[in-house]
Length: 555
Image 1 (cartoon, rainbow, N blue to C red):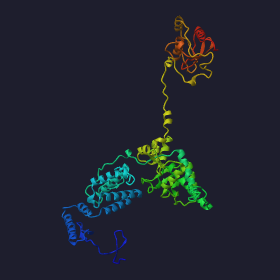
Image 2 (image 1 turned 90 degrees about the vertical axis):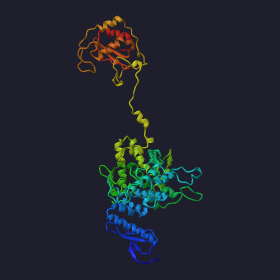
Image 3 (image 1 turned 180 degrees about the horizontal axis):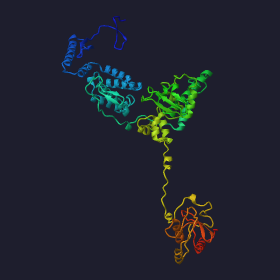
Image 4 (image 1 turned 120 degrees about the vertical axis):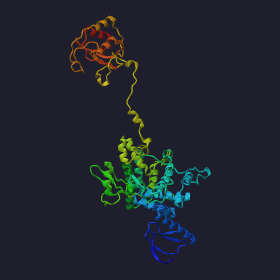
């Protein structure tokens, strides 16, 4: 047990004063502030040399030889890099950066600092850092494949680079104020040694591509999550009945396990139908749910990844289930108890549901439920901009490319939605105007039946054609399908008159379905195969010629 004078440390915690093995220098800097710093020297003469350097630097600041920033940078060189990293972490926490992101950055920086031998700020070197990263990317030898860790992916490589680049900018005094930045922070270095470091393309080296689940797989997963807690409790682990569900479970415990299974199924369902991230769902409170005319979830800025705060719409059926689920709870209570080992729990649920975790280089994990949300939005035909808003992405390419699994999209149905493009054949190159099948009469003849002809040879002579062309125009009214048509000639007056003339002159190439003589002054000609002819008043001898050409089988 140590005894001594009690004092307070830098963080305010109680400390005991003991004699140090290294000397401490006490001096007044160029601005007149008294500082006490460790010289790191156990020899008194060496410690005096360090003290003299500190005093000389203070005098240079007073005489304007050095600026205050330059003096501060020189003073920071004697501080261990680990202390600078700890100060940087405190800065990130003060900026309200997500705790998981801070932890990841701190872990990567400490790991790389140890691997590169960075102990002081002056030790930071981009060449040494890139060499160390290159070793992480190297493929191990076949004999050492089982012992050596797998090469890091491009995204992990970029994560190391981005951590040190951000730390380097912080050391040169760069501070962020929203989307703007300034250089008024405390300066520890003159330049950022990691500025401009190259990044790798993560699209070319994706290791754990998330796979979206199909609708059937999602249904099977919900069912497995609901049944598994009670099923595992009833499963015998040892003995001759190993693997069988014969274990006895008390009624109270049975109800608790059923409730647990229902909660896990609700967790999966909520993640899939809202696109929430796991940590966002974990921090969701009952008071964050709104069940008005348009039910929604309100994400507080402190719980959302982007720290902006958002609202997420709820399906009506999910809203009804959530309303029943939180009934009777305190407003501040958590909606779900999302355990820390949710990934391990999901792996067991996937196994029970018969869903492969890895297939074709893609993986099903807890974040893949968010990918399933984005994929099923696209599959349902939701507009990309709406899907982007539902996913709460700042970049639409992230929604369409990363969070949309193209393997689940029905490309066959999409192709069927394209317009039908018909190639005309020789027998459709007619002078007659075409009509749709809906325009044909209900009693129009069909090819192949008795009395019907698909083509009829022309039996008219040239003299008769000349007689037809010499007919005088006739005043007609009341054409079927037209409004107030006046004088018509078998010339270029109307398409109807030109049609009938073509049918008369080229009768052997026309397809006529039905011809009725209603009176001596008009005929009714119904089309077949794209030939369109209306009620046309013609000369009586023309009608008789047409009847004789058609033959039997018509009225």
